[in-house]
Length: 212
Image (cartoon, rainbow, N blue to C red; front, side, top):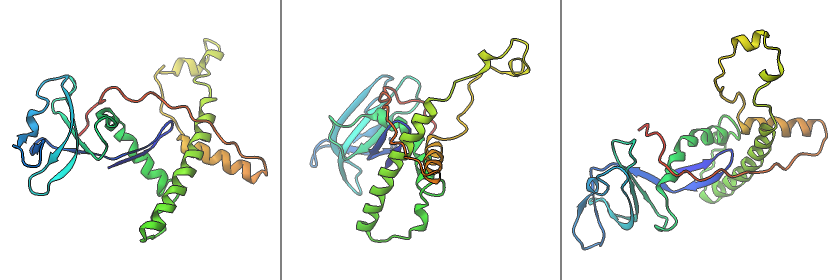
């Protein structure tokens, strides 16, 4: 299961990747087929409602896709209907760790709540989701105003120009942390807090690099 709260998108993706060692059936009483045979060639893609697993059957939608850069296919099960599901959404999985960090030790400290009642947890998670959306929106807007580089403003003989590698550098502050700092500083100063703006990025059209 993937829950993503990223800089430019909030998504709950009920996707689970499975291996190709099992079987599936298109009908509960139909014949079983090998998952490994679904998308044998690069560029193949397939999606359909079916039943996966023999021992503990799961009625779901299966998304199968094999990109040219991947040795193994992606097989993803979801409870979304086929027209709503897209295997490319699973390419956003790398962002999940950032979301975990912001929700727990790097942000809202969820791990200290010790909530066990599902209804209370659901309300708490709703508050966390809304707060994260706000903080990331403010941080993303502030991040967008930062200059990409100031090297062009320096003299040709400046030491910074000579030492520059001309390679892109990672963001030093996440949009979550930058938004947090902006909001806290406004509150401490007794100033009005910004609402922030959100600019969605295009949905992935490829599976990206397969690191699993």
